[in-house]
Image (spheres, helix red, strand yellow):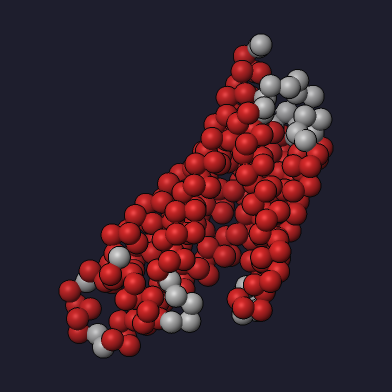
Length: 232
């Protein structure tokens, strides 16, 4: 094995392992913490849950920070892995993921501001309604900014899908799943800017499985087989 092959294999392992770790962190930070503490359309219940489980909420923020760091690592590793197919498109995919992380970083800051508001001694001067409004302002800002970022993330996946389908070594079904995932992220995240969540919940549920399969499938394939085959 030449040094280029070894380097590409290492990039595949780094990308695959980081994507898997990221999925676990997302399951904790969003799937468990966020979804268990934030009650849709009920500011009072959401704020009460956050105040009662503030430490868990802060652990969730740490989970988001881990995701942010891993996203940057993945952006580099995927660029290194897909570069032999097309350097320009590989760089574009990496840049799109970095732009997405900028959205994510801004969104995470909004979650941090929730903790600041709750711990601020001056907050006792607020009425319950004012306090709940202030906390939910930052929660809603997190959701809105992150959702905008997911549109960029969908574009990133679309470029990865193109690179995967163009390659001779990435399984075609992964390219197809990535294309479906890209479509799902772009359509759902764009729709959320104009359509109430409950009106697109069915579409999101239908697309969620192939979206997850595309990302997790690529992660597992990269970790186990990526870079082992001859790169042409």
